[in-house]
Image (tube, rainbow, N blue to C red; front, side, top):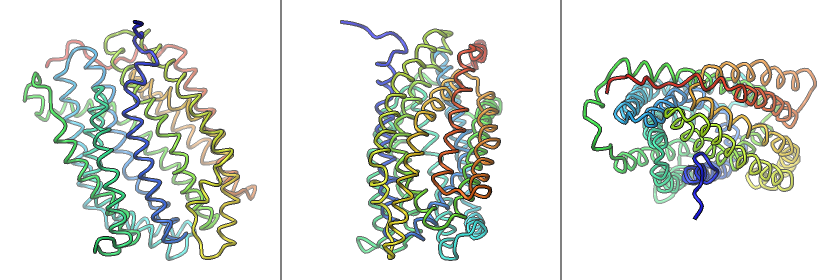
Length: 458
């Protein structure tokens, strides 16, 4: 019987398939949510789309910081220091609690800010109100969302990818049920419309947090002192996570700026953009799952100083991810407009026809975007896992703000372009960034960024 080499495609897929199922269930949840909100009309769909982008602007900074535990946990596990790995996971959980509580207390003000920004972007009064209402609801439930992510990320960092998968498979159907109950007033619940979508997601995250804490059991060999708050450990989580948090936050702000530009193109363009993003997740999130699995292995191999196995792992990731993204791009070329059309609802048939025609051209650009994004995912995740996180942050932020935002603005304001043109120039930034990351990895400099302190006390 043949035995697969460390870092082989088989080993990557063994860790990736539970993450992929989690991601696909997350995608299905988002797709169903979008379909449900779409039944309320184009204004509700556009408001939730704009509000969802703003919600990510507030969540991505802590989200990125919490992902900072990934290379720390996986590398310390590889180095045989399990107590230190558990301690870093615990400190990420404490950090998630503090940030989530702050967002909860600020939810009302954040919602008002979102409505004002939507109006300033050119959306009508009703759509802006929907945006503020949805954003306020999302912030009210940011605490369980971040705590759930912190625990799930710790489990994946250990290679226990099936625990978060089990939680997702239980929680995402609950999210659909809760949304139906509170958006449309099913089972005697109040009909809350757009706010019901935020409420349903929040209640589902609370259920997920309870379930994952019940399923998560710490290694009995880990001493209780690993739970003690230590500022040196917290600073290490913040130091490693800050680069990811800053990058995710600034890139999300860039995405919000592009969305602001798109909002000026009208309600139809905003609605098509929202649906196109959700359709693209059908390929993006499984690709992220493969990159995540590779990152766990790469971090562990770097912790063990097995750099050749880390390099082999990245090759395996690329051999899986690029054919998959290429195939999905072909599907978007052939049937993307039909899929997007299923989510567009308008009283005026002319407006719906306009949306479907626009979607056909947008999905061509999404297909071009696919392969570039596969390079970005593979190399970004690999370099972060190896500890080369600062360089990834600098290049990622520069690509977003020097290329993506100016190109989108130039297309719309300078050349009278539409949503499809914005997506096309967006793919240019992805290709440039992906090729730069590939060059950095091939230089081998990531080998000198190992995070483990071999003499660190337990």
